[in-house]
Length: 304
Image 1 (cartoon, rainbow, N blue to C red):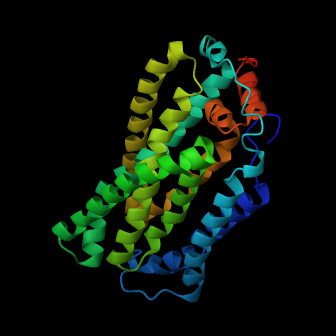
Image 2: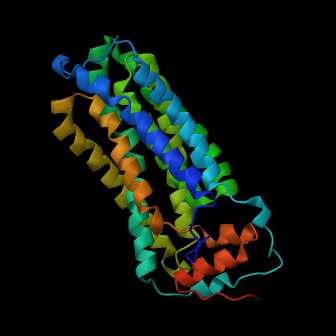
């Protein structure tokens, strides 16, 4: 941990994982560009070697990134006997650090909501390109919601093991990885990727609320949580609708899935403004790191 309490535990592995995922997605772009003269219709096209290598890089990158975010368990519970006065931070007025966190979490929620909101905009083009019925296309939403349900449980467990910040970053990396859905040549591959998209989306929203609840002073917690949900959700739907209106006529429905790459990268770029939850750190025995986060937010908590 650095002086801010938010450094990666294994930074080299995390950034190598990010690089592998990005390269894995970019490996699908040449085939997408190659199909431009056909209106970006890729149904039935065989996957080339570059795409297959790219598909392999994405899960490998997720493994690396997960290890990069995994706490060094030898450091945990070293100072578990110490406690912190969290009520000191709860009585603070909102300051610049709190507002930075709120703005970043609004972006994260908007990115999270944008993915499932895109479903309604891709289904007409997908139905036409794959030659499937509207009922068959409707299974896409069912699969996505199933992934969301599973993800809400899985990501809750990950957030307790790896931390709230780590879970948010892993979700963003999965958003990036599922951008390859825009280059899938068959509807079945879209179903698989849509399940994974739902898996990542299902956990990010409640974790952002958890992180805010554990970081924002109690006097402002209620209205800010409501504002986070309202503004972030509205922004996500507006981004999905705006992207469909501007980009879909030019690059077909597939481009809407590929937006997972820039939007996921945006969350990763903003990670420096996402602190780990001080309560999570304290529960893991990382008292020094928890105190550093509290000091950063102006709490100056001390041992009891």
